[in-house]
Image (cartoon, rainbow, N blue to C red; front, top):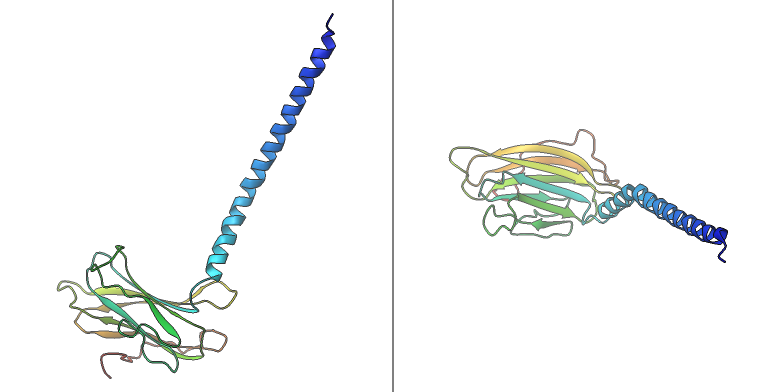
Length: 199
């Protein structure tokens, strides 16, 4: 004759075992959910730490325009770097955008990066390579950022320059950086300094 208490004990043990497993699973899922924001933040910081340069100069112009605008930069003691001289000791032009011609993306964008942060004066110019549209000026946004070792990228300067004629070259910024990579106070100006169209 079967003992009715034996069947009850087996069912009770199974229930307790299932409850323990479910609680462990719920606890594990809760820990993963709580850790997700920290994992994403750590990934962003790692990507920022591995930025390809220290002084970053970006130039954007409207994506609906097919016009070719060029970014030119000059580091202390170095010649101009732009589309026909894409690399120097300090700066490299990483993206030369021709407008809509041969462009894999719809964004009109050029960027230069430096190796290191030499102290001295930096010059950032924009150049209207081709003919602009007849009915409007081209607004060109220029952004300068600095990425010190083991720190996050920090934006220093931003402006918009308007280009409205063929071969127009405008100085977006002239500024000085200290040996520590800090912007020297009262050093920022837009005093014209042509880099490729003559002085």
